[in-house]
Image (cartoon, rainbow, N blue to C red):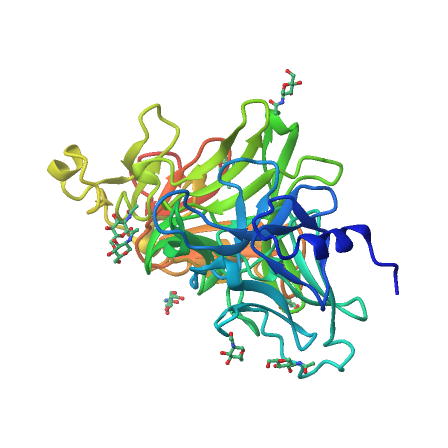
Length: 441
Ligand SMILES: *[C@@H]1O[C@H](CO)[C@@H](O)[C@H](O)[C@H]1NC(C)=O
Ligand SMILES: *[C@@H]1O[C@H](CO)[C@@H](O)[C@H](O)[C@H]1NC(C)=O
Ligand SMILES: *[C@@H]1O[C@H](CO)[C@@H](O)[C@H](O)[C@H]1NC(C)=O
Ligand SMILES: *[C@@H]1O[C@H](CO)[C@@H](O)[C@H](O)[C@H]1NC(C)=O
Ligand SMILES: *[C@@H]1O[C@H](CO)[C@@H](O)[C@H](O)[C@H]1NC(C)=O
Ligand SMILES: *[C@@H]1O[C@H](CO)[C@@H](O)[C@H](O)[C@H]1NC(C)=O
Ligand SMILES: *[C@@H]1O[C@H](CO)[C@@H](O)[C@H](O)[C@H]1NC(C)=O
Ligand SMILES: *[C@@H]1O[C@H](CO)[C@@H](O)[C@H](O)[C@H]1NC(C)=O
């Protein structure tokens, strides 16, 4: 046994004075409890875990969560009992149960939250909790007495992803994960907006409003997506697809030597997915990205065969080349939902061509054909008259089933297409080859 650390002794002293705001433990041990007023802090002091009331006025509800210790506002990154608030924090504690689980309960025996790990499959010593610590990256870990991880908060995201945290986007043996917004800024209970992979296709993610798609991310076309260089943190954020065991996860982060960890991704309760960084000079959060940013970035806003043109000073809907508005009056009145129609009917084998449109967010509802070379992908589309478009990419690494190709075909309408600035990919759209409006490929 290690000698009893000083802070444990201090906390035995302040244990009963839950109003004392200065009682910070570095870990939770099986014979100790955490109650309101005391916190567990990460070694470097970045994060704290404890009881908090999210609103400063009105009915106070208490939650156990993790927050940035040195950031005064919007600092909560994880909540344990988000749907089960505690009305009277003076009788509630977070503690080990039978040495193998953590539970948040009160003296009346009400259970607000638990890690709920079953002993099945673990040997007794592995299933026996040794201690719980809050790591410098914000991960709250329940360690077995053998030093293996029994449970960690990073496996249970709420509305926020921190660098190093992963969101599961496939569902082979485990459920898909989503970030779920707070109900409102004062209420961490699950709100209407969620963010995660399309359940049918891990290559794209959605924001949903309830069960309705609200915003679709660009489709992955490589395994690591490098974001813009950000002057304030002197670094570049990257997003990556990571296969682990038989599932695929997304995560984001900063290159290894980068010190600043004050960056997060959050499903905001207004419906936006945000990448934010804490600007300590100005003492406020700066949104590096906030999506959807414009009306026409919302899902399907420009209708079939329309697209949202982000390159213009006034971001608005346009018809793809070779197409015109279905209803010109509506279109002029900025009602875009009916979309666009072909100016000239397709002739199929008698002479269709493909328009090359660059820097696009490619449409929704694609067919992902596995293991095709570029030429095979083109043939796949040209030889089938119902194929309206294709896009091809090499993902850069054979991470998924040994296949690095990504051949996408569109059979029906092209919906939720966008023209992006400085990113995106080439989309090849089938048009009538004679009198084609633009040069064909
Ligand atoms: C614990 O997990 C079991 C099995 O997954 C589930 O049936 C039970 O409702 C859970 N209990 C709590 C308190 O979450
Ligand atoms: C501890 O209790 C939980 C819930 O009652 C149970 O599922 C688990 O198997 C127990 N663990 C041990 C090591 O007894
Ligand atoms: C969430 O959606 C429901 C119905 O879908 C609606 O009644 C409610 O007002 C919405 N809540 C918020 C906070 O937007
Ligand atoms: C989300 O959906 C609800 C209806 O279910 C609607 O009232 C609300 O305006 C929508 N929110 C946004 C941001 O579109
Ligand atoms: C904060 O201010 C210092 C000194 O003016 C500057 O060097 C630093 O880059 C600023 N940091 C941020 C995040 O803006
Ligand atoms: C399509 O256009 C882009 C950008 O102009 C170009 O880089 C690409 O090579 C073109 N594709 C083909 C097949 O020519
Ligand atoms: C891909 O297709 C080639 C033949 O075109 C085949 O030899 C190879 O085994 C396939 N690879 C996978 C991973 O399916
Ligand atoms: C064209 O592709 C669609 C979708 O894969 C398929 O259902 C259809 O049978 C194909 N048509 C031909 C003529 O191959």
